[in-house]
Length: 144
Image 1 (cartoon, rainbow, N blue to C red):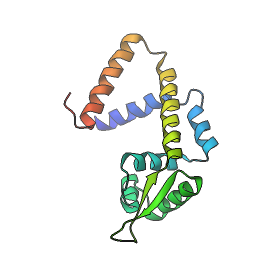
Image 2: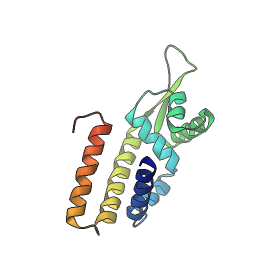
Image 3: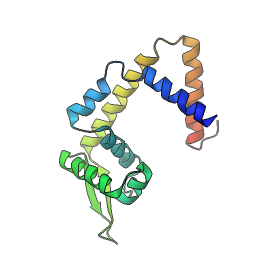
């Protein structure tokens, strides 16, 4: 069932994503790769997480995450902080520039997904909204 769910989700997102390519354009305009965008979202969601933990969470090597972090520092999207107790331990924090970028990214992504699902019937969209709300509540640990 999980494999079927994964395949269905992948097919669904492929059908409704990027109808006009605005998300990809936004990433390109800002000089941010998709992986760097994912890293930014993780840093925003869990500020202060050590680079090693970010690497583990993303399934990437520490050198890869360090390189992405360095690029994001140069672009002004994150700041790097040393742990006061262990100076070898580094963490990242998003800057106001990153916050604005992530806000714009989410808005554009939501608009593209809305456009992509517009051809669904109203009853199907309502069922999809209900199913997604229930899934998100469960993932976030809230009772349905």
